[in-house]
Image (cartoon, rainbow, N blue to C red; front, side, top):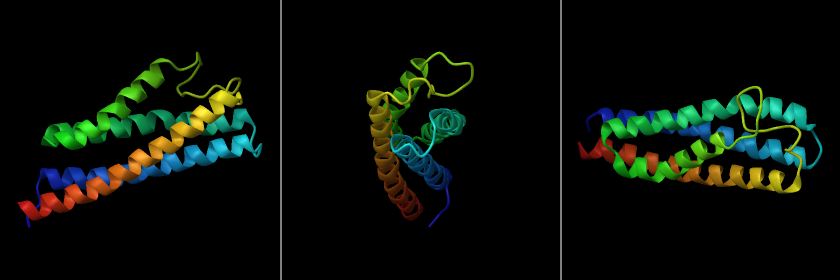
Length: 144
């Protein structure tokens, strides 16, 4: 059993993916609170908008590690979500600061359900990735 760059990449990806899972869970809980009127839209957007760029940058960083170590399958399963993140950030509402969520439009029914569905899909992708990263780490540690 040898420790190589691929194993290191998967270990970092596991830790990073755990943070991404927490971001996705927070996203789902935040929009559920907004749907049930526990929080107002301004407070909700102020708590969600600062987390958008760290989530995107962490996800891109993990995939850069996969690119550098030549883990093409791990990279390929994440490329659609990276493309969606880029598209989503390019088509965000006009705002003064970074983030995706505008307090004036976040309570519209279609926007609210789209954001909740996005959170659940991201959570599913990150959970599947987490278990694949465990497999990749174990495989890279055993095979070398």
